[in-house]
Amino acid sequence: MAELRHEKRNALIKRMAAQFIETISNQTSMITVTDVQMSDDLKKCAIFITVFPDSKESIVLDFVKRNLTEMRDYIREHAKMGMVPFLDIQIDQGEKNRQKIEGLLRE
Image 1 (cartoon, rainbow, N blue to C red):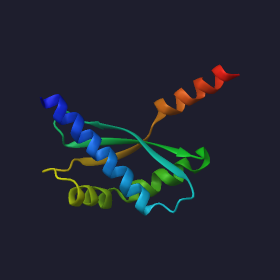
Image 2 (cartoon, rainbow, N blue to C red):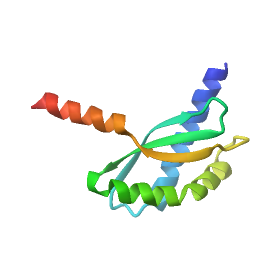
Image 3 (cartoon, one colour):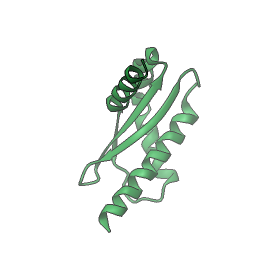
Image 4 (spheres, one colour):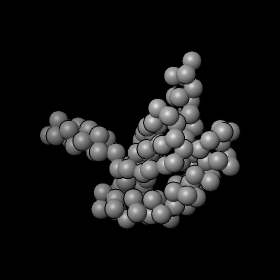
């Protein structure tokens, strides 16, 4: 039961983070929320993103990190959950590695 609740919470935060990023971004790069990992105590949440093109990765990461407080407020306002965890944004290195391997296999 608790595991299902944890998964639903992750999915909700993933969807809300994607919506927030879509509303604040200037559409010069494609930003995708790929995963959310919540700590066991539900107080911290890591949001993983990918950025296309790769050359804008550091700019986008800085931009989104500057807006984490607003993202947390957006999630609090639009999601029906009691406590919203502290958020962190990271580039999804696993997804980047998967894409690199897939490209190598195609060659």
